Length: 261
Image (cartoon, rainbow, N blue to C red; front, side, top):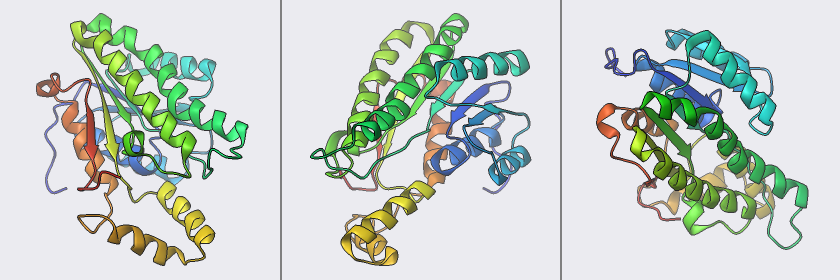
């Protein structure tokens, strides 16, 4: 990005789950560029991504966070409030998947995907929404997927979790509507991230192709003949946090590059 971005999020505090990699990191960087204090957490070591965020954010809050654990969520939100104030913006980007068909699907992997992708955002929203309502301003952005409405055969749990996330987001939109709080889902098609690379490696192995061949095959199916990039989601999320974007709520905003699959 050339020049300094408009600082319309100065004074705002933004939590981005999954903010140390992929889509989450791109969104955290975009919000930081626009002046927000960024709060990120991780179950594992933060690594180099934390240093990259520190270099971009005016203020950065980091604490261990496991969205699958209600106590961890509460401790993270309380720690942020004590350090920088309550969150004005919540981006739920943490997510996992499992390459399994329904026939023979391992039950624990099913539960894990639903817990992180659907119950995790619920826990985060439950912890952050009351303060947003009390202040009369809030933005909740949930990272969904076109798989919520079109499905992928060997990602049953992922598809189910993202469909559920859409329903949750719309219920939250109604709850927040009288109080200046919006709630939307951004649903991308394939995005070129670390999780995408891992998924392509599994699919290539299962199909007996190289990873490059698998990616080329996928790109050829896309109307725009390309993969969506994380920075595109960052720019969209940043726009949705503007004051002028309050009316965009209860929406499933598809960043599909022309592909409805």
